[in-house]
Image 1 (spheres, helix red, strand yellow):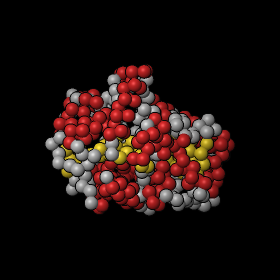
Image 2 (spheres, rainbow, N blue to C red):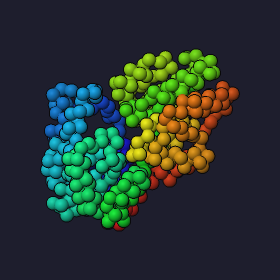
Image 3 (spheres, rainbow, N blue to C red):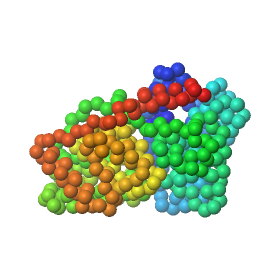
Image 4 (tube, helix red, strand yellow):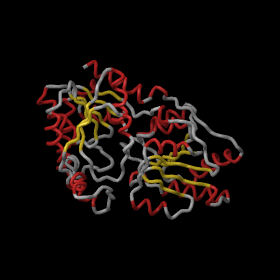
Length: 385
């Protein structure tokens, strides 16, 4: 979403993106509609020998992560399993006439491609961290060899880059603590929201709670479900009086958990525009994190743009946008991951107001964080190089 929105709005500020990416891969979710936002941009798709591309060539389109796959992925995590795309991306990139190289990661192996292109062409390299690299929370680096390899490349790339953008101050601080010499070229550009994506929707008659995003180990939904079970029992509520929607991809073991309850449903991955509409057609938003210091929920500004009251299950340093917004009066509450009683009580409070016909609605305090404004900020930084 972040690169798509940058590509959508950068032309308004005098920058013409050319997209360099892979051909189709086996993956758990697709959104063919996103490309419609970029109708006039040049896109170059290359071959690759990474596992996802190879599986697609062998006839697999839908990829379902299995437990035993993780050990294989961990073994080839140098710095990720997309590294076999590097030579193809480099060869294609060398044939493009460009002024700047902008690389957004993960996958972090794309930074290596950008580094070699910058070295060979002399063009400025801009690297964009959507997640922390050395502290990457979704596939942590294990063992001295992996960590040493990643540390070597991280230092090499941030030192060579002319500019570094990050989504969060935590990433900036981690990089600055390791490489103080690069601090002056690091700029925070958070993930934003696009007002074009939000339109008035009709809320359902049944009290509905919604989660937007992927469900995986770092976002285990068990405790928020347990809190809703407690809320149901205390208020003597039937299953058909409430609904908890999980909008987005859900890994298999959590899908089986969600299916155990009559009041829960998982939509699976749906096109982004539909996902936003489904999310806004709710009475309460929920967000889940099991607490990694480097977990930065990318949807924070979209949650706030929805105007929905928000219950957060779990604490993380990456939640500071929420924390600040809630202090400024946005209706939202952050609970420890294991605070079942606290979450249950707050859900009950929102439900009781809903039953009395009172709509709780917030206004985002971050109106400056529209995707267009953030693309303008990026363009201004690029023009200073």
